[in-house]
Length: 322
Image (tube, rainbow, N blue to C red; front, side, top):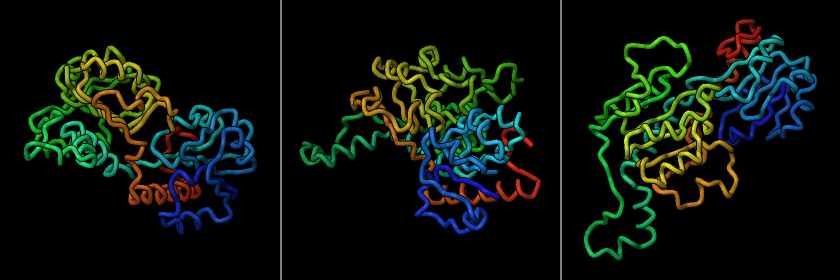
């Protein structure tokens, strides 16, 4: 059965054990990367496709009638047209849970960075400012205790729950926002968004990117947050209106923001959040998930998804296809 891995470069395969993947995909074609105009050509005649970030849309599926299974080597599914796949009987499976420990670790590290400003102090030490000090320490940047403060979480799946557990261990109170889905039944342990925004000292995003959540963090959302609060985003860049975020940071209403994702990746060199002068902003290059252990778990789960589909019992199906 012919199959194609469209962008294996995205997982940095030289650092991983791919023996199980290559055994499961014997005879497959592996591409380091695939440009949009190459997708249909490369999937011609293929029954199975694996993609990380390459978009597989309705037009591609129309051009590739042999396609029966799409494996997404990530949790996010916004790069595959799930409705079109369902209509055509194409099963789509993603990988889940593989990045929980790794991304939670990064989200908390970003929160600690905003609270302790250690990255700025380290930069100053390397530039000789500590050596120039007239006393034993420097106190150039404000540091706050997270213990006793309130962490608000939007998206309470495995990742949100792991971040909550770490936060509680650090002495933080945790609030979970009520579902943002229109018509969703209110849960007794969830907090309505207006109250959530009033109470949270830190807000961490762990929700999927959907029509309902795109641009969720806009001017109104930010204005309703507590003055001086922090925002953490290790989920998806388009959750945040980046112009609104810049305005809030420059105005001093938001106390700080730490992002691992942006709306365009890689971002243009002139991206407004990368000018270096936006106050109290940390940006990392979508690296929350890149530990070797995390990527190995992801590859192993891709293999299991393909094997389960071949056996007629697909798992982690995200479109209820087939």
